[in-house]
Image 1 (cartoon, rainbow, N blue to C red):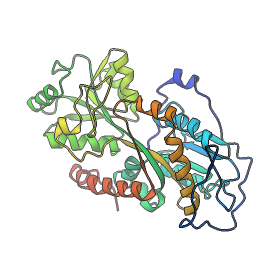
Image 2: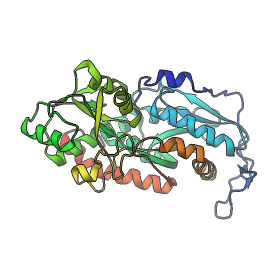
Image 3: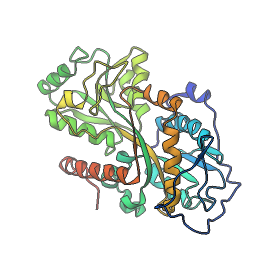
Length: 366
């Protein structure tokens, strides 16, 4: 995940913030729990600790981003639900200073913190986007990491990317097909805003444009999604670009942009119910693009602790208030992927994206 600027100052001002106290060091469990025989136990709706006593100190939910970012908002919604079912305190820590490699650097930082290798710190993670860093950026060489270091606990949702265009574009309509026809007739003229070259969003658009035979002007590269939507909103740098639903709403609700396509295979829902999805727009039936969001822990975290966290987060994701909040984002799909299923999705995304990156000259894997 890339570092993003604050996109919702007013929203953040209304949200409760918490910080990792770091005052309680977890007791090292004396023995592992046999997962073949262990069954999660809930008492009055609260998940009970493992037989070895873990966890016996707070769990910190780490957001390697700004508090008002899409991940920051997800963490806050999740924390409310997790607190209802957790036997220990649940805290939030926002850290937007990790650098270029975001989540990867966050996990290495976690390993050096008290309880970090026990599962007492879980980081919000994008299964597909984070994995693609391994071949779209030099993170593998710079940090010495592999997919094995991305220790997924659970994934609970997919939020799509929304193709946003400025008001009064050169093709003169809000119809996706009109945009395609215009770009084909004027190759290299339309300005596409690129969010972090090599990111999942960038790879997604390369795939779409290649599939449709579209040639855009050399993209104006912005550092984050808030800069991208601002460029489309009025500064004149771009005609269109992919955005998170929250960012796309900024221009849409201000009446200054239109959203004409949603990635993935699901309908977008309001306010973009008429926007075609990836199948309808480009015939991409196995479109994996969007943010598959969940949680990860360090690779050193014991399997029984990871499984306990899976049960905790799974139960929290079934909370009605949590589901209502997440489904308010257009096109969002809720599901549950365990460690193995999330790993399989990451591997499939890498296999899917590698030829796209190689063809575009962006491949940076080993």
